[in-house]
Image 1 (cartoon, rainbow, N blue to C red):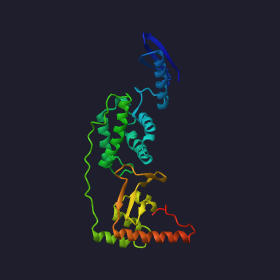
Image 2: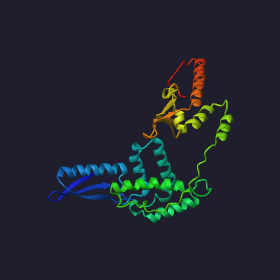
Image 3: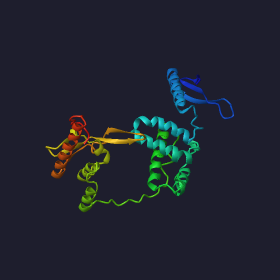
Image 4: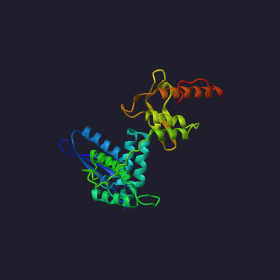
Length: 288
């Protein structure tokens, strides 16, 4: 991409560079006024050209929301977990861009977003079976609002039009807690099944399923009657991976009741016996 600098006054410069030709084939240029030294002006021109090359040489005044979201996702990828990024991409491509992607970023208004959300609530499902849930609409708005906040920071727009939208109310579902009788019934129902230790741990410790799946024997102390939660299994499209738990509150030590300690001791002995049967030997770092 070509660019040039022209002095207009003392320490004042006119930075000019070419954009992609318009749909009519005519040449288009971007002009930026700059105050400072010539060296600073040259640096500024290089920075602007580099930014436009990443975006695809789109003038912000012509850039649509869809084009901006593509750029925002590139910039966001390294700062979030993989499964979070995949959710961003999915909602941007499936929900936001089809409804609003054609609107120029600088012309996007709160009413456009409100109207789009209403359509999504009425008939937003892609299987044709009605609308999206209020919670999904709020998740979509969270992503859109985050992207537009960055647009304000990057001086592409003056204010975030997603901040003032009217969001649907989410009905809070009442939490259902299993009684002792129901818990016993659940355990009896999976007796002898490979799921039994998982269900048992969930009932005894209230650990999340990803935390249970990532639990290793090295993170248990059956003499002390405790275990440490430090990792979790994360599902992404087409794969899984083990990662550290997100926060210091999630990283915790759990005291086990005597019943759980005895259960895990028997379970460990059975698993160790299986390993020897298959010629794998003892492994204290194996998954529980």
